[in-house]
Image (cartoon, rainbow, N blue to C red):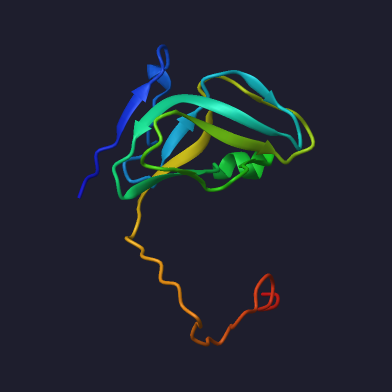
Length: 146
């Protein structure tokens, strides 16, 4: 089943519209619409020129690119970033240069990935008690090292 995702590009940005590198890729490449230098250890907001109309029941997930992460220590800071169906503003990516050297972004560089994901219908039920489980309340490393 195909889902229609309406996108609008900022004037002069049609050449950097989101695309998949391969037809069976999970996500669309998002590209920078500006040139900028990413200073180490500082968050940067990178605009893409993309505006979307995500169908109700879906969300956009902005994810890091594995090559940028491995080769240059560049990541999406709030990964995955969530784009709600009702949002109509420009898609911008919060990027962090976790490396030690500045990293230059050129207009058109692939900076992140966009996956469109179906959301389940969820109804919250407030209760007085939860059932027991083998894990219980253990978290944050409670299962030990691999």
